[in-house]
Length: 316
Image (cartoon, rainbow, N blue to C red; front, side, top):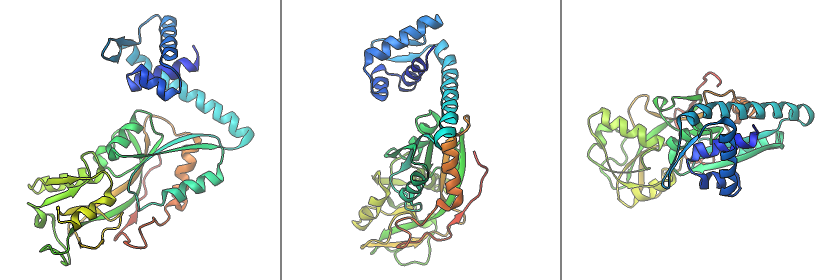
């Protein structure tokens, strides 16, 4: 059995498509199909149930998948140990992040890591599906590390490092009756039309739940995938917003009003897979976060988050 066979099997198992697996592996579909057939012949069992419409793991395939992943991870660790002994830290890191993350200067952090460890291959993906999509990518092994903003209850199966708590604010048009107030509660905003990110984004999940808790489900009439676009829609009078202070909020035509709900904050969390020991490259990057990699984000000089605090948690 060859590592190439295992790599092709895992790709098809995760994509549930020979075509997408071939694209992911930068090869052609016929090669992937031939590799899987050879592996099935060697194992004496069909690993996939195939039809003209779908590909699904068979019962033997389901049992084989975690073992195949573990074998590939063991090979990667063995290879990394030898390479690091001769040439310093090596490996690859697949990192996912949100489109708006002004509380953390991620380019500076990764730039510092790259200068220290130039032989580690970094691949960074900005997710337009929000924190929920990032969490699923880590759980399924498509990412090694993700920076996301989900509530703690949504982080099952993930090893977490809590980085920051950022307060939420209400954002209303400048001519709104709540504009200029010293503070408002969620109950004061009940019945309004809202501008927000789509379902699955961490801030959307938290705010929806907060309003449901007080018995006032929200009506979101404008959904935008980039949090930075929210203030413009509020300024246009298309709704109000409850957003974390991680992007510029005080744009012309809006008024920023602090929320009075105690403890209601957006968490920035670094997550990795809870069931796998982190590679040395991943541990080194996480250590850089602990060393002070949380430099000021690009928006902090303009709208500094209030009551922001660093939180300590167990290392994954």
